Image 1: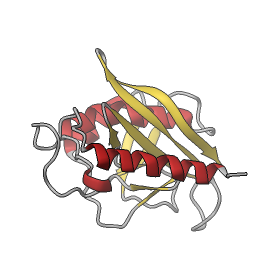
Image 2 (image 1 turned 90 degrees about the vertical axis):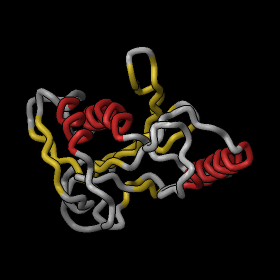
Image 3 (image 1 turned 135 degrees about the vertical axis):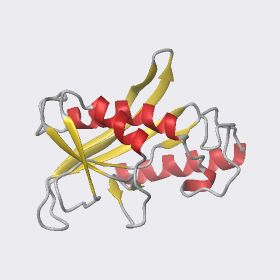
Image 4 (image 1 turned 180 degrees about the vertical axis):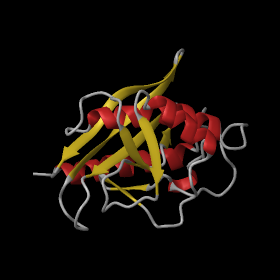
Length: 188
């Protein structure tokens, strides 16, 4: 019997090979604002980087969605203070990891996130998976959609199994970005 992790890895491998083999043009705007990025990628296999305005729009929806998914939360954003990592991490399995050299979120992205968590407030703190905060990975472009992976550790001992996280696919519609599909979720 093939395990779930093995099937997920196989699916990712097929997706990556398909992406490379097709040499596809992503329709999302890149940092240059002109289409697919021609610069060396800072992430997976030529992954285009998102323009700051597009990243702002995506995270204004993704962050409150991740907060609402927290099993310790209220199922929605409430009037409280949310600690959010001040940079985007990378996806490693079902987790969000940080190398320590990630650039900070721009002021525009921070403002979009803060507006998205209203009536609560956002406090941006240095990423630390040992502390209670929301960690978001750089969204991964897949055709006309993006996949956002998030993690909310409880804090405490490094390596402690306490937290929640998951991933969801977002698509752009007439009214902006929306969550189209929950891809995974976990609690420990």
